[in-house]
Structures are given as C-alpha cells and as structure tokens.
Image (cartoon, rainbow, N blue to C red; front, side, top):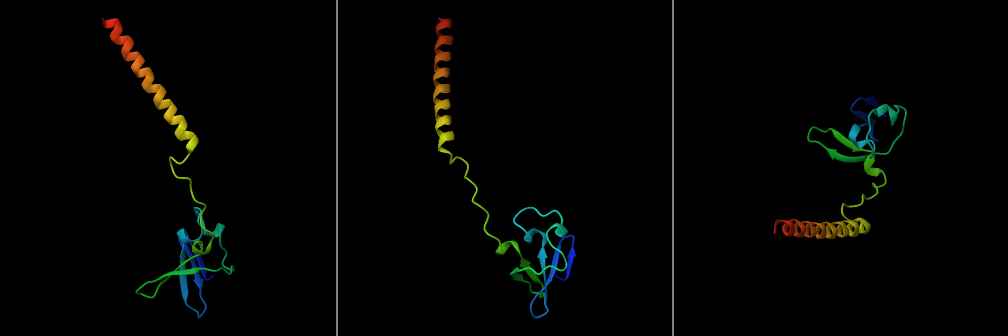
Length: 107
C-alpha cells in the first residue's frame, strides 16, 4: 500500500507500478472511510480491472471477494402470492355484493 486518500488507496504492484483502488472497489458493502478497511502497511490482493490509455491502472479488491448472496426476486414468494390471490378474490366478491345491495335499494 503506497498511500490512502479519501477517494481510494494507491497500491504498489509487483514491478514497481502504482495502481488505484477506488473507494467503490474496496468492499462489496458501502465504504464510508477508506481507513476503516485499509492501512498503509497492509499487503492486499487486488485485481486489475482496467489499464487506461494514459497508463493509469484501476484495481479492485472486491472483485476477488466471494460473490454477494443472491437477493430474492420480487414476487417469488409463493405464500405471498397465494395470500394476494385470496385477497383479490374476496375483494371482488365484496364489490359484487355491494353493487347488488346498492342496486336493490334503488329499485
């Protein structure tokens, strides 16, 4: 680790080149302060994610972390789906009953 800045950390790579791990590439979770995750004396592994035309090297530590657990997709809960169908059916029945009672009173 060469130095830490508010926006990321500069790492010295094998061969002496320096690359930047942007704050968004330090951890899968939100990183508020780089100092909470890294120290200047740390030795870390990082993946090269880009080498720009001007020679700057972009690195990522989070790319080497285990993938995030999959989030359940919306609407994939069968219990909720059955409850929703039951509610909709009961609601429609109540509306029909209400309309019948209103029409009956008008006659």
